[in-house]
Length: 112
Image (cartoon, rainbow, N blue to C red; front, top):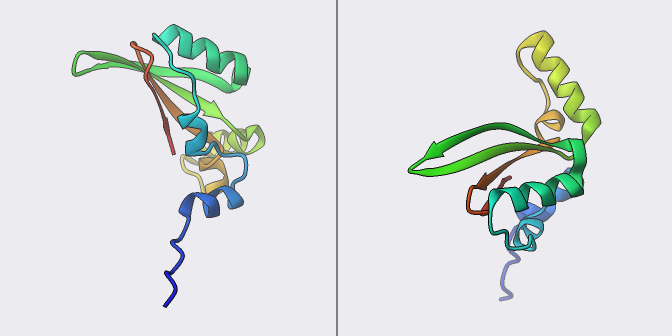
């Protein structure tokens, strides 16, 4: 009996939302030695679609929280719905951005 092919969630997800970043993107990021290097990299690549939302010290490490918009039209619709209704009814808006966490030491995590 042939081995059953494993379901590739990420492939299916990226087919539905092709503008989303893949885990491969995160794996291929350069090594950053600090937060500023990482921030500059993302700002140069994504411009105004990458912006700081908050920062916090967790277990002694300062972490900067960013929003990375990957589909501006859907993101703007989401923000409008949230302002007007207090909630969003669809997934397109929720999939229009990624949360990006950057530690002071340059580690990066993209939330999928």
